[in-house]
Image (cartoon, rainbow over all chains, first blue to last red; front, top):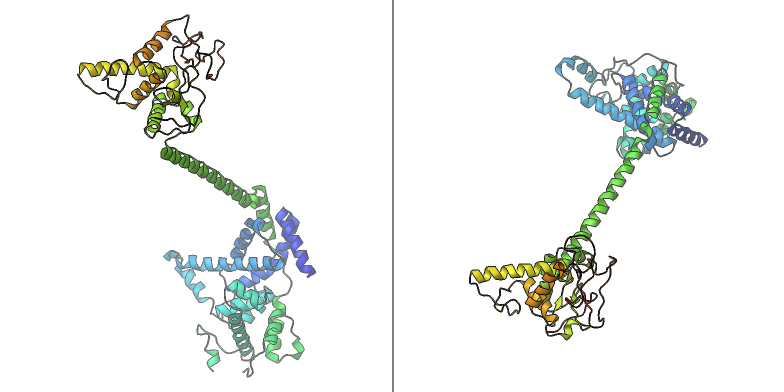
Length: 195
Length: 291
């Protein structure tokens, strides 16, 4: 609770133009955001993170809410950036289709290792490698964003029940993957479960 | 293989990092460890972007981007209010115009400064209905109102200015001349320069009524009016006041009331008004005239 109050104070200071407060906000949310983007297997997570922060700064004066709302705002902005990036990628010229093909295969390619191999990044990668993109999104929002199932439901735009079903299946799949690491997860997410 | 479904509490505890790893099965223990590592503190590499973000934040403050949105909102509000005020003004103007069109009466502020022809037209419309409302004024003569006279006609304030009378007499004489040359006959029951003159125009009828209210013929009225400007010594003040001060015409003065205010013939100087020539109307009244 006190953390929430502190966060509200920091946000208000940042809105008033306090650079130190803005720096504190960045330090609190930069690593979860970046890990979330890497876990979502975005091609250029640093670029998306940078765009997200610029968007946050531009609209900071309009923000109203507590620390939880601010956290949700950051991750929602990042999600929109991911969606926009995917949309842009779908209409790119043919010259960039090679890179696009790589990115398209990335989400379900177990050999895909995004970003630098920090311990946290490797843990995230190991955690969500076996999951579908939707499951990955929900699990990462819960683990890195620290949201409850209800909050994730709001961010994703689904019902809380749907989120609970998704996370239940995700945990099951993660447990199976850990107990049987040789299982290969391809584009067909249900394949391991059919064994 | 995981044989039993996980409970909601275990899943929530696992994903939020609150689970007790010791009490979990091996596979779930591993998940708990991964979640714990995933939430480890930020590395320097991850915070390398801080300077860029702070720089962008500083630039945003310098260009006042942070306060741009509320400013835009205020301008939209003020713009919206201006539009509302303009709309209200337009509605009032349209409503007033509609009301004037329906009643045939313009407000005093409009009729005072309007063209005499407009006022006369307005008067004609009112005379046709024999009802006097608005700015109509009864013509008085010698302290008696028009309703006491034979004509029982009310004259709009527009005819009361000397310019109007003079111009109307002038127009009447010209119209009469043209009518007589073309052998046009058209009598509207007027009296004046000649019987049978084309007095069908409402303005001429009004002039005729005005002359009637003075117990004069049109000829006499117009002769007197035309003679007045020529007389320098007796030229009335433009304001009916030698001092040039605006003066409300009096009603019922002893035999010499109703002085018509004539404009100066040369446009210079103020003369003494000639009394007893043309009756000046009294103050505006809403009384109805009788036929």
